[in-house]
Image (cartoon, rainbow, N blue to C red; front, side, top):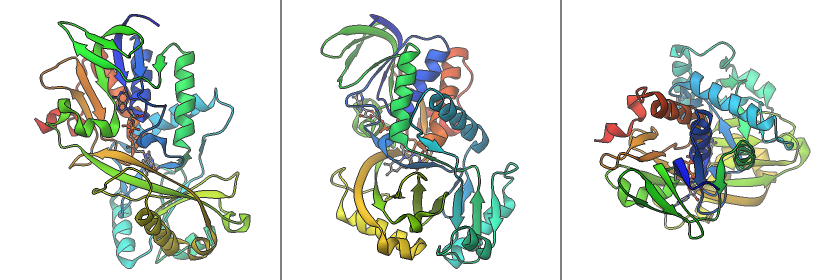
Length: 363
Ligand SMILES: Cc1cc2nc3c(=O)[nH]c(=O)nc-3n(C[C@H](O)[C@H](O)[C@H](O)COP(=O)(O)OP(=O)(O)OC[C@H]3O[C@@H](n4cnc5c(N)ncnc54)[C@H](O)[C@@H]3O)c2cc1C
C-alpha cells in the first residue's frame, strides 16, 4: 500500500467502483475504501435491469445512448476476465396492463427518436405470442437491447478486475479523513495515508452526512423478492417491466420480482408490506406464475434520490478537494459508468459537468 494517493474514494458500490476505474484509467493513483463489503449498499441487489425506457410512459432516459454504451462495454470488459456469467443480453418486454398505460406508452413511443433496433411497438397478440399468459391491454414495447444483471456479482468481479489492474481496494474499513492545507490525512484504524482529493460515493450515508446537509438528498427503500417456480412456467428468456419488474436469469428456475419504492421507512430490512406489494404486482402481470411461485428470499436496500431524480456530481461548495457522486436512483447501471467517465474527464481536463447532474444546480 502506498502512503500518498491522488484520490481516496469512500464507498464501493456502482458509483465508487466506476469512478475508481475511470480515474485510474486517466493516470491517477486511487485508493477505494469500503466500510463493509463490495456492493453492500443499494448496489447489492442480486438482479437488476439496464432499461433505457423507464416509468409508466416508457420514457427514453437522459443520455440513453451514451449511458447504455458505457455500461454495455464495461459489462463486457469485466465479463471477459470473469468465469461466472453475471449479465445477459436477453431483452425486455414492456406490456401495458391498463388502458391508461397503453395510451401513455404509445404516445411516448411515437414521439421518441429511438436508435435503430432499440425499441419496437408490439400488438397485444404479438406480446402474448412472445409470452403466453402475460397480462396485456392493447400492446406494449419490446426492447431487444435490455440487459439483466446480477449487480452484486458484477461488482465483485469489477473489484477483482480493478485490483488486478493496480487499484488499491480495502474493505471492512472505516476511514477517518481530516483536511489540512493541500491534502487529506486519512486513517483506517490500521494504516495512515494521504490523498489530494476525497470522494464520497457512500450512498444512503450521504443523506445524513453533515458535509452534504445543504443538498436535497432523500433515501428511498427498495425491496425485491426472489421466487422459485417450475421450469415450464419459466420457459421465457426475456425480462419484463410492467408493474415493477421481473428479472430473469435463464439458467435456473428462479426469478426476481422488484421493486418497492418506500419514502417513509423505519428500518432497512425486507418487510411484510413489501412482500405483499411485490406479490400483488406479480399477480397483475403474470397471474399463474404468481399463484404457483414459491418465495425463497428477499433483499432490501436504500437508494438515494433528488427532487429532479437526477444524479449529483461535483465538489463541496467550500471544501474544494471534497467531492460527491451519488443519487443514482433506480438507474445505477445506466448512469453510473457514463457519469464516472464524465466526472473523471472533468477532473482531468476541466471539461464542464452537465448542468442537469451538477451539484451546483442546488446552490
Ligand atoms: C431494490 C433495488 C432494486 C434496484 N434495481 C436496480 C436496477 O434494476 N437497475 C439498476 O441499474 N440499479 C438498480 N438498483 C441500484 C440503484 O440504482 C442504486 O441507486 C445504486 O446501486 C446506488 O449505487 P451507489 O454506488 O451510489 O450507492 P451504494 O450502492 O449504496 O454504495 C454505497 C457504499 O458506500 C458504503 N459506505 C457507506 N458509508 C461509508 C463510509 N463512511 N466509508 C466507506 N464506505 C461507506 C456502503 O457500505 C456502500 O457499499 C436497485 C437498488 C435497489 C435498492
